[in-house]
Image (tube, rainbow, N blue to C red; front, side):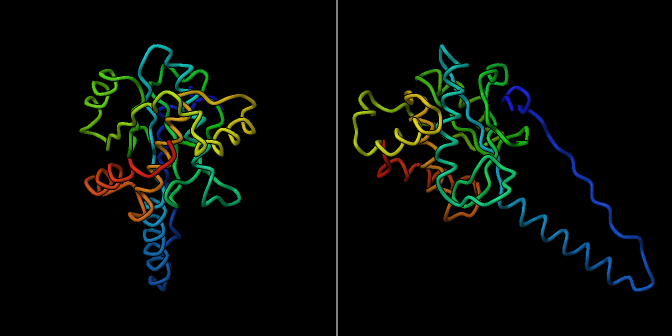
Length: 215
């Protein structure tokens, strides 16, 4: 499914409860259980937007999504998944941005929420900083610097490069590698929190994850 068909699609769900019977405790208990289980499900999924800025946005966005998905597929998978993968043990739905640049994005499951819990911004400065400032009030914005030149010569990236070749039949580019790195950082940041919040704790964990991961 192309990213253009998935972007900015918000689902509304309805639940029908059983009709009231003579013993009212049964439907009441069912309602309590449904609310509890719904809360658990909500806590174990989040939407991560990938926002790419720069010159070749359509191509770069598609590449970034591929790199991100590769990291989201490394751990915590299970049969019959309805998300785009897992980060930190939590279901993640990927929302590619900007919406008008998603024509080359593929292989997303979704559907994501229109308002992302986390927005990862990829691109050159100062454009990335400007884009981040526009979203910081509504979502937790995480700036991922593009990897330095020569990243593909680092033997710590050999596993990523091999998996990318196997999955997509070509060499990964800078945006794919940078998005993969961002997803790995997010996995480390979210795992002890069991979700994409609280914001301050997530930001602190994200900043701490900058050191020690493959470049």
